[in-house]
Length: 259
Length: 273
Image (cartoon, rainbow over all chains, first blue to last red; front, side, top):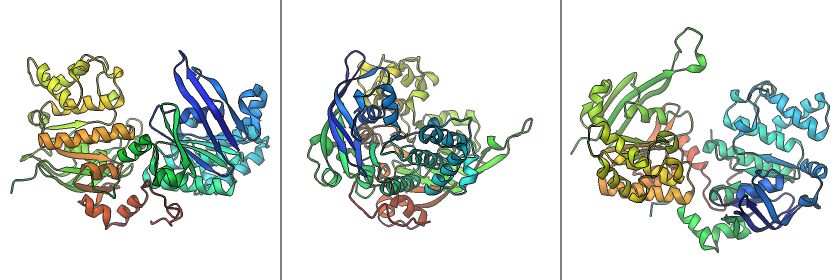
């Protein structure tokens, strides 16, 4: 579904942001991008979505998505391809417009992306809120973002992302801002929807525990470079690169006595 | 047996509920803590864990008497500070310090880090606090060469070290740390945790460590206190609580932490309520 080949990007002044990054994600697969901040994991997701910061330019490489070369497309073709992509962001509150009701925000996206009528978009929004297991979805549609909990807001954004039936979703630290019990519910929700819709997911996280639970394969990044790439069981059970091992060593665990 | 450093008994706190405020009326009081008992021994580290809304931050603020409890008693180092006026608290403040989550918002951006670290000493009327401030910076793992820098010129980990230096400069017996490693990378987090362990060992510090992260508590604390909706649901020795939690909420909290282990059943396990 997604193939990134030798992708390099630089910030203004020639500072390397990504260095020859290659990875591929199959339909229905969850690929984890893990590393510390500044490692470039979010930049890969942004490059795929075509929302890199203004100061960052792609200097080499290719992104193939669903048979199309994303970097070679005209702006209108790029927008067309974008309909098969969606983002689940880290902070649902800043991703939602504070002054508009949930219904308006969801149906806007559905009408624009799927060309639905107002009534059909409303029905689809309701159906998706059911699917993300929100209680009283009718009521939620009438709410403003600040009236919902963090977990509810994230469910709304997940519903919106999956409602457009994308082939690939970029989930950028989607549970980092949530309480741990809510995080587990949201991880399960993303996994269930991703499986039932056979959606490919690029899952950006700094948390090796989250990687272990939801990803099928993983790229470990440092300084814009992939230092290790493998199926998740190999990364977790036999990390090959010293940097990956250092990340594990630095990760505290409640189930083990301190060193 | 010496008395514990800090004893809190049946602490109740209510805070103004801004959401319920009506024009020209005083905001109604919303109960946050419903009778919390907590003891911190000299040199002991206690982890206070809970999710948002559990009251853990409010408890911390009450322990330091940044807010006045509506009920209960707080004894610090033999002094009843429950309703003590600020004049009576002032001499004790040097012995009980705090470090906040976001050092960028708690440090004055227009002060050098040396001036920030020296400020608590200067406030006590010390004429030349600089030598001791430099010692505190070095204890916190910052070279004296950084003393003239401003907060925005430092990394997140370095800024958190400045916050720690400012807390230890008055040689406190007790430090309250509220989510101080939450925004940091695992590698930086591990370094700050190492620093705190070293400071506890070298200075005999007692620590109340407020966090949402159970795994961090295991690294740093002997004892853990689990809070939910303004009450302590369980407390005990870390090894025991994490191996055999007694309260269903503690179990649910622990089960929700994703360990870096392959466990295909983890996401499918039915949720305990």
